[in-house]
Image 1 (cartoon, rainbow, N blue to C red):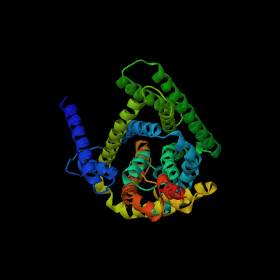
Image 2 (cartoon, rainbow, N blue to C red):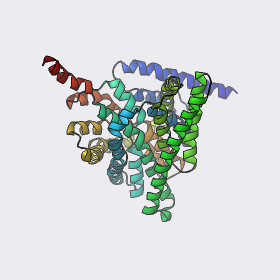
Image 3 (tube, rainbow, N blue to C red):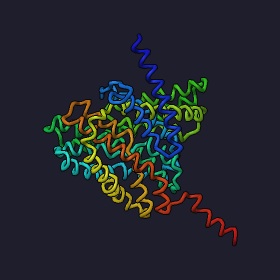
Image 4 (cartoon, rainbow, N blue to C red):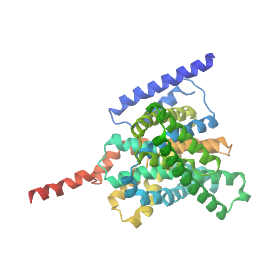
Length: 408
């Protein structure tokens, strides 16, 4: 009993510390995600908190639950206009862009760390997804002057590229365990099953929740409970049958958020709060999971990987993906720069740890350092990058034209 009470106390104190530290840091423009991870590291075994935590299975479970809340919240706030503007560019970014970036990072990892090609590609697959929480939060808090379709592409891409990265990660983990059973045809079929199944589960689950919201007569607080249960059921059912629960939960959120029903406002408000709690919990836990004294020998190689990812791999994937859509160079460059890494790459790197793959701890530590660099460098410079590239919000761009019309 005493141990349980202590865990509850520590959880509450850490949550409050992260919240207060985040409020203080936001005044100087520091990305909140860095603060949450930092508090977790200070509470961990190498910090003054001294809390030992090294269970990747628990980390995977907590991470999955947190991402259910984060992705469902992201879907709730993805309106139809955003999807119309950005669906096809975002889909190509989430597939072709992920594959190109993962290949480039994997090749460098083979050279720097002496990994085999499957291990290097696994590290690339884990590292390349952008983070829905990081992108949405930092775009909003930075107040970067970004055109609507660019912001839409970044947010929709971050919701769609998780399934692709999860597929690549699990496929490569399975290949490392059983290389004799792997084939290109099997991988293509698995990808189709995961994406197609995720889409079916997401749309069916979203419309089922919508039906219940419209027909149930219950207090608004219970509607939020219904949304949580439905979200968990959609994600869990998709994952159990081998479909993509990440795609399913995002699409379910899109359906629920884009159709009228009596619970629309209370559910959105509840998930706004739950999304923040999920982000804080996820980053605190990942900060606890890392062992800081293992990081210094990896800093320089990880900086090289981060530089390749930010300056070469991500831009190559973005320019290749957006070329058919004839986006301007400035818009494409900003999409490349704003590909923020966050909790998702660190979360995915727990899969090789959990499965006991060789050098899984090395991959986790490298990914952790790269994420810190990405959030610090890119997160802190989103607004300056937008201004440097001469981007403007749609309403700002329209203002001179309206003024000219009124003058005429």
